[in-house]
Image (cartoon, rainbow, N blue to C red; front, top):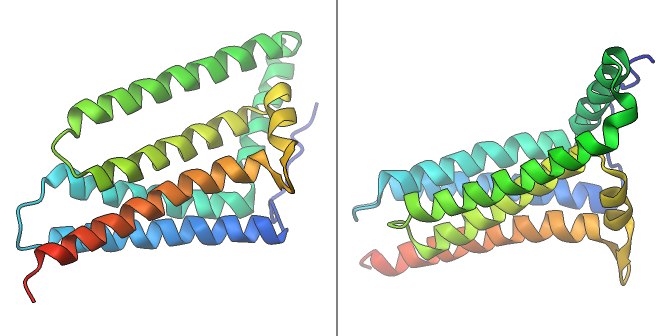
Length: 190
């Protein structure tokens, strides 16, 4: 078994580029909200600003990853290691454990976020939910679990579930950013 990954454009389709644009819009919007909140005359919890900054960095990196297809390199490393270490035949069990672990970790992150970020705005919680959904989606997608891949490649009307879930999470972030910006404008005296 050889390492069989080369850098290149991961999804050169129109929908792939649209997804990259959504990632970059989410990154820029999140950064703009963080900057606005940091300069606000109103008291804003520091954690809320940190959430928006973290979302900005996350989506910038995921946007770059989307077209460089780095998750395929991750999958290829897993395959290579499985062959080299002799557990390739048990890969389905490992994939199932990985996906289950990611789902549990994702649920714990959401629960911890709810507790730790209870003093942040509902708009920020909406964006954070979108961020968690996208991150969980990306990690599970990177696991390349056959049944997950089959589901993600099926279509609802003409759009693959892959795009619906990924762009859907990004739309939650964009909605949260738009709502948080609108709420900030209402607080600013004219």
